Length: 239
Image 1 (cartoon, rainbow, N blue to C red):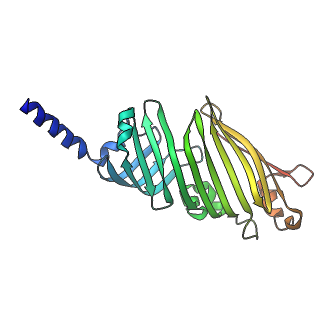
Image 2 (cartoon, helix red, strand yellow; image 1 turned 90 degrees about the horizontal axis):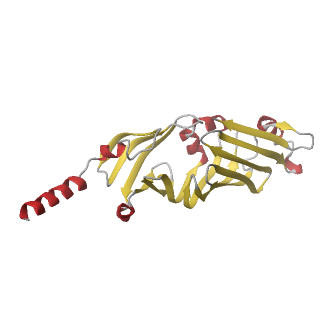
Image 3 (cartoon, rainbow, N blue to C red; image 1 turned 135 degrees about the vertical axis):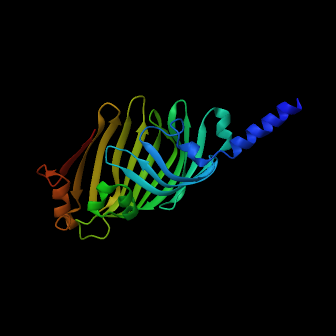
C-alpha cells in the first residue's frame, strides 16, 4: 500500500508539473491551431503566438495566457480561461470529445488592433472598439454577439459611422449570422451562414442617412452596387 501511495503521489506530481508544450499536442488543439514558444505548465502557462488557419487567411494572436478550470476535468473535458495582451477581458473555452465550445466570452479590443490580427481588415483601417460577448456557443447550439461601437473606416471622412451588432447562432449543421445597425449614419443589415460544406455566405444592404449621403458615397460604392434606390447590396463568400 505504501508503494502504491508513493506511486500515486509521484503520478500527481508529474501531472501537476507537465510542461506547457504538452498543450500543443493534437489531442488538445483542434486542426488548424498551433502555439509557439510555450512557457509554464499545462495548467497555467503562456504562448508567444497563437496561429489559426481560417478561410480569411492566417490569424495570429500575440501573447496568449491560459489557466485550466479544474472542475471541467470532472465533466471529461479540458476548459481554459484565455487572456491576451491585445484585448481586455477573457474567453472560457472547453475541449472535449464533442469538439471545442465557447463557455463564456467578455472580450474587448480596439478595431485597429483587430486589423493586425486579421490582415484582410487592414486595408480598411477600422476604428472604434469591438466587443465579443457570449454565455455559451458551439457550432450546434448557443449564441454570441459581436458589437462594433464608434465604428469608422478609411474610405469615409466621418469619424464615427455608427454602432453595429452581429448575432451568431449555432444550429445542428451551420452557424447563422445576423447584422444590425443599432444607430449610425451608415445603415448596415444582412444575414448569412457558415457550414463546413459550403463555407461562409453572407449578403447584406448598406445605405446612408440622407444628410450624409455625399460623405458616404465612396464607401457605399466600394461595398456594393446601388440597386437604384440608394441601397447598396454586398455579398461575401468564403470557402
